[in-house]
Image 1: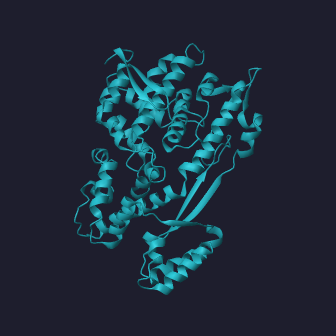
Image 2: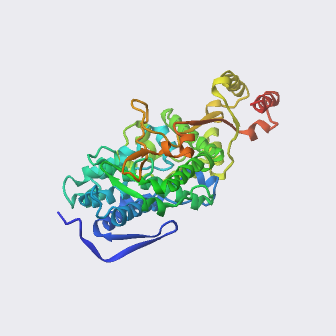
Image 3: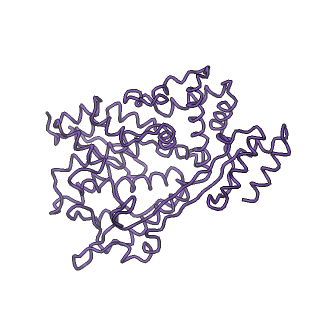
Length: 433
């Protein structure tokens, strides 16, 4: 075992567009950054297919993970230092959990997980607990240290204050990705006064609270998050790319199970198709690997796979219309039948995609996705839930916004070759949505 408090002989820094510099003084953190599992995050985009909408969104989960670490480091070393409710013995555990919290993300995470029924959080735990370079570095501190890091990330660790630093309604994870994603997409929505928020943070028993005097900075953060979700994360063009990506993976899965003779055999996908993916197999998957297959499959004999891959690689995305599933489900069934009659497979060329977000909520016992509230530390020393003091936050508290869109290939429907009357009928129906 080694002493986790060992410092590097010289501080290492990463130049960062969001935080200026990411500072590394602890040898343990430096060793973790150098592991192959952490370096793999350089090859996983933070925003998946968003680069097809906002061309600057090429940043990685590697840079985001460093950013979350840096925010937690600043909170612990500069804000919590000397505070009575902060256990300074949890410092290294908190830094490691912040750095490694996204370790298990796969390529194009959410689409990938949906098709293959995977959970990136489970793979994060596997990387931390099983035979990996990360595990060996963590075990050098103490045999049970990897388990503690995994518990913080999975929100089961006994010290909930440590958990709240990377998993709460206002945490280091969100504070980094909102600013980082805004920077790389070029939008102005995700900016808020993080330095002010950090100045008013206080450790209080099992969670972080915020001095009442900093309420307006917290309001700004909540509204920034709201705007980023609807202007960037749920952008309809990005969702179109995700639909096509999902359909490619579904098509490959179906062809594999039908013993289709691939020109380029999907060897990296075999264990995924069979439902017995190992950690070793999973770690071999990154976005360059996936895009290589998509590029090769542009020449496949199967017309659907070939077309979908060309669409994704060349950004020939689906068009969309607003869709109300409660009112228009019968029309959707009619469209599916018309697509079949026109020789267009609706399973791959007609898709409903839904987005939903709850920007802020207070604790509602027994409800799904319970959220611990943000508390303000009032001048009299008492705690007050944020929406009781902020009329802005009160207006959006507990209000879930949901959006549905119907995606389809307009170019195929506008093509005059074959079934022209049916295609015109389909287009006339879509125009009424």
